[in-house]
Image 1 (spheres, each protein chain N blue to C red):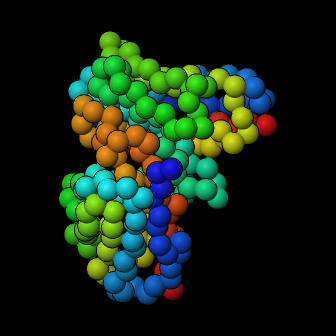
Image 2: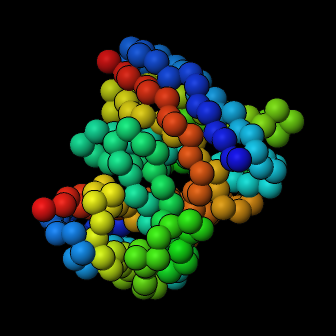
Length: 120
Length: 107
């Protein structure tokens, strides 16, 4: 069974940093892209960042470029989202999700339960 | 600016009704489009990928169509458990933008 578990979300003040982690199991982790998506109450689902199967290719939503960094450790089945210079508009429930292929240009077929980030 | 525009923003329908949600892409994305169902307190669920392919385990009353810039999600016979918000997402190339969502309510 595919499982994804996010951690690291918490309340922080604007300008501070957080690192989110996503622990994956139940599938060939190094064969799939991983996505970070957030849900913001009143605004819906927002794509944040993605990386391909080996981390060579990454992509970011414009508002987080230069502030967030996505990475993966295929030896430990982990994905990270380093979030710097946090803003109130970064608040939301952050999900990691498994891509449907090796490339980051893919849909997401399995999702974690999410970790809440609050910036205020 | 790459946008995905969904309509309507919300709808209310009766059990057994046919419901259609549309999604318009600002650029040609061929068939690189997915549909998700999201209920608060749950996790997003992939319904459709590649514009018209039904994800494994999703009821056959859900279907997707379209290509290029115009897409639609249809529920042929609305069920109580279909009350949710539905999102389209492009994944042709970054940004992998979501639509604004369509909230489906049961009358």
